[in-house]
Amino acid sequence: MAIAALRRSAVATVSGLPGGFWWLWLSTLVNRTGAFVLTFLSLFLTQELGHSAWFAGLVVALHGLGGIAGSPLGGLLTDRWGRRPTMVTMHLAAAACTSSLAFVRSAWAVAVVVLLMGVAMQAVRPSINATIADMVPEHDVRRAYALNYWALNLGFAIAAIGGGAAIVLGYRTLFIADAVATVLCALIVFLRLPETRPETAVDKAGNAVAEEKLSLLDVLRDAPFRTLVLLNLLVCLVFTAPWVGLPLTMAEQGLSPSSYGMVIAVNGVVIVGFQLLVNKLTDKRSPVLLLTLSSVLFAVGTGATALAGTPVLFAATVVVWTIGEMVHVPTNAAATAKLAPEHARGRYQGVMGMSWSVAGFVAPIGAGWIVEGPGSGVLWIACGVIGCAAAVGYATRLRKALSDEDEGKDESRGEDEVVGGSPEQPTAVKDPTAA
Image 1 (cartoon, rainbow, N blue to C red):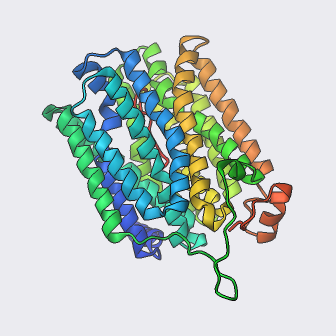
Image 2 (image 1 turned 45 degrees about the vertical axis):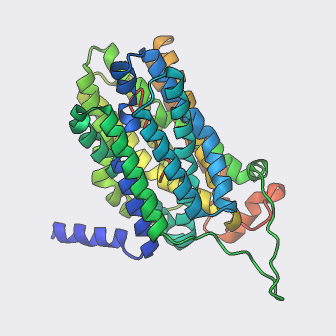
């Protein structure tokens, strides 16, 4: 009986979505299944090329820095050029960068390639999220983002296992395999995914209506969206901190790197195993409630890390903030789509993606400095406080903007309304922005 109920729940979770979405879902899975570079980049730099750990950390930070530029660039291209051309071009650019790492040896060349790879990999995210918002009915958008995020994590888990087994073949083989998977992803998009950019509006006489030109500054003048971005930045800082602070904290307590590996693996196991169940439990819930709840879970999970002392307790904290991650990522993407005008979905998703990239650049540096300075306890207390502050912000500042009632949504924009309507580890931080 329980198995039958679980099967019905799974069918309900994946049913009713357009066929184009599943081609996009497959492209995400294929792309992430070959995502070896970031997972093994630090080992490649230190063991293969003989660089210092400091240099390896700097190079990974450059990847995040490239993402800060890539997200708004991708958003602009998504709206002006189209979803599919942007995806194909940026996937191919990322593949070119990945394959280059198999051959470059100069420290400067590696740094430049990783920086450009960060630009390309993040530039594709707004087009993916905008495509989902274009093709999926609004009431199913959050579910679609959650399913795409599930594919991302399933692929990431496969890549970690497969890459670890295949590393005996050499880093060059891994990087070429990553490039091949990315090219295959681009081919799926090119051959099977239709262009979904909304057509230009026309008046009663059939003449094209000029769309409001929106710059990135114009997007940030949208008060509710600006608030959503800033609150997401707080959550991203809390989410990113464990990927650097957790292994350092566990090492302080005399626990082995293998213990950290098993603890952080809980994150992927929980997401792959329970994302569909979380989707079912949170379906049709208020986005404000879900964002507030996820922030509290981040606060509790990371804050409790200060009290943990064994691998089991550390794993328990990971379970708590991982549930917050499963709730937050698709809900935040859906909230961004809800606030974005149709013709500016790419730019809105690009600005939101930039908050993830900023956190991915700042949090690893800040977490390392705090652990080595004031101490790991200060880091986890700070994460708890920031998470609670984000929860209060979601509960008090976005209730009208994210209400299901259009009237509430319109009133919330006030004077700042935007014309157009409102329709991994310490050196391999996990990237959730493909949700």
